[in-house]
Length: 350
Image (tube, rainbow, N blue to C red; front, side, top):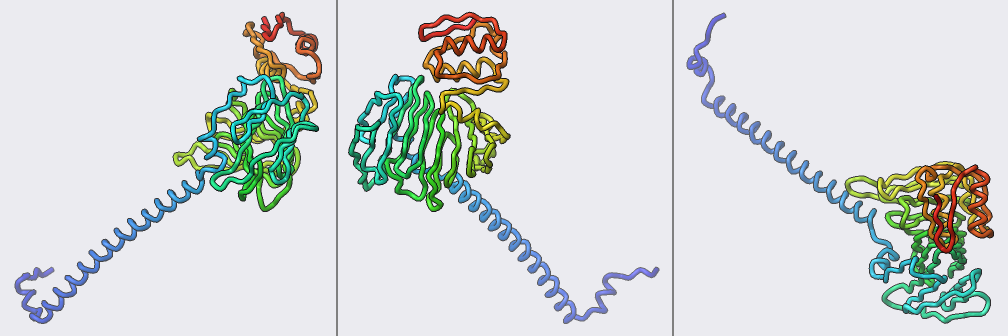
């Protein structure tokens, strides 16, 4: 192949051709730089949009509810410091409920609350700055029933606290619970009913369900009897976004407060609702779990000193109308357990 002298090759290109070639090369270089710059700005803008969307979505997902805002400023009420069912009004006045079976019932306007058959109290409903909330505290050994102003019925178990508006004026009907309650929610498709717990919301339109959220337990359990509910809960993601799950009747959803995970499974409905009728059903539950339930129900301190008994399981039905000593005897007899106990508001199992 014949070599070509570069200097000689240039002699074949005219000055005009050299000028046009230089312009084309310069134009290509400029176009390439512009594309790179445009790509750089486009990528930056896209990233900015994604970040802004993520921040907006995070704010929307974690927007504080009205009742959660109230809880941050409300006085902390310790259930263990009471020995009677107590109604705490918005003006901080406290009313002791003397009758064990008295129903607390609100008028539709929230202007009155009736305790039992005779005691009627007028309430202030007009407040231009904030919603008026009441609190019902149910100590260990007690239970009570509440009819809210929208017609929703709530049965509260021992060691429970319910905070709620005296009248529902917002787009959502929000209440807050610690402990355990059965809710029979009045249907209103335009105003969903929300039960709030820590990092946890149960949303319904009209249904019957049981929720258990005791502060000394690591789980929040929701069991649905009829209708349907959606549970919104704080997940374990980096942005702490809320997740949701829907459950059907006969299903219990258990949320772990530590792992921020939730599991749903089919259960026997009677097991979760029987305490309202004074009955407890247990199915292969260990003695420690059972004694914690009985301790709340009877308001006695129960200590299991024999560690070998803690994981012993029990299945059956307990009639809670019986004295605690009779209930413990039944547990011993039906499971062939060997333990002794002493009484006087303090039971030791050894």
